[in-house]
Image (cartoon, rainbow, N blue to C red; front, side, top):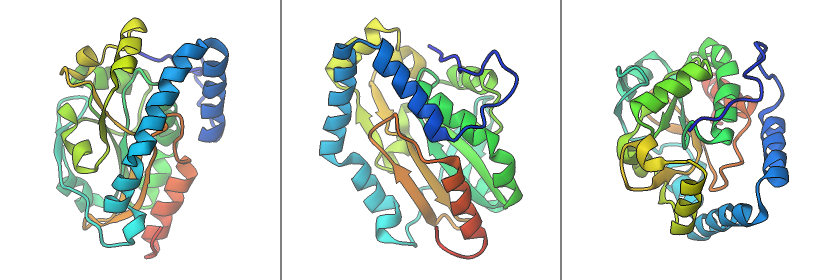
Length: 242
């Protein structure tokens, strides 16, 4: 259950825009993944969009309501087992909070590597990054170590925090069967039998917990550009609203 980055054998970081990196991975899926397998994933995404999962999450916690919406507080263990609290993070500055599916997802890996490459710029404007996934601590450690992430990867057991953000769904039965055939063992990787995942989402949160920027998408192959996130943090640092 791991995705080897296209750049793993090369010490140089991939500095291309994230959209270009993800487009390359989409192309690989289109070329090498059987059409019937792709159809299962497309039906899953279409079903989630029909439910309005991302729209509902954004309506509650995102830009659709304007400023003033508060993020839930949390205390979660990181990839090393250290407890990280939202209060501690907010005391240091603004927060970029990323929800991902897991180390088995090549699109999550691409996003994490791209965000890691701008972690220094995020820190330079008084903000920090944390990523959250339902993986076990061991899987989170493996992902953090393998991809040399410059920020903590928090363990959201049973998606309790993701649920508060309105991001959680149960993997449909046909996709469960498909994952089982392709060695994506979610009960093992997540340490529970719920077959639940968060849709990918990104939030920029102010010191007082106010959400300044939000992006969520049922399509796991789409993620916001790191530059867009950095811009949102910079706008917030200047006293504006992203």
